[in-house]
Image (cartoon, rainbow, N blue to C red):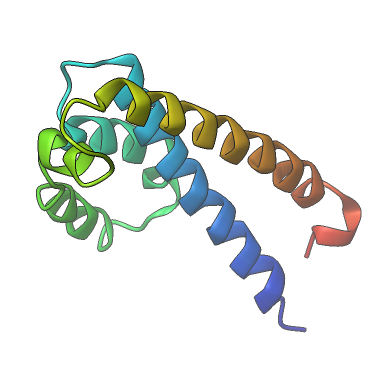
Length: 113
């Protein structure tokens, strides 16, 4: 019996966890480039679930991450870094709360296959 919805939810949760971990790492380490934060997050979230064929592709993709200054500049006007960081923190708080709910659901009997 296929479990496409459950498997899709599993990978969605993993992807959102990767994003939240990377951006949270970047907020906690203001001098780190985004590529460093995303590489760190990849190692703890997605890498354990990827095959030896997929890992090098993701490693290469991390090199395509935009520079931190360019990424955050697109989120707010110049001089608004504090506001952007505060809003990012609130957004991450909300995402992390949703991840807790999703992980709880994934741990339930109904979500197992």
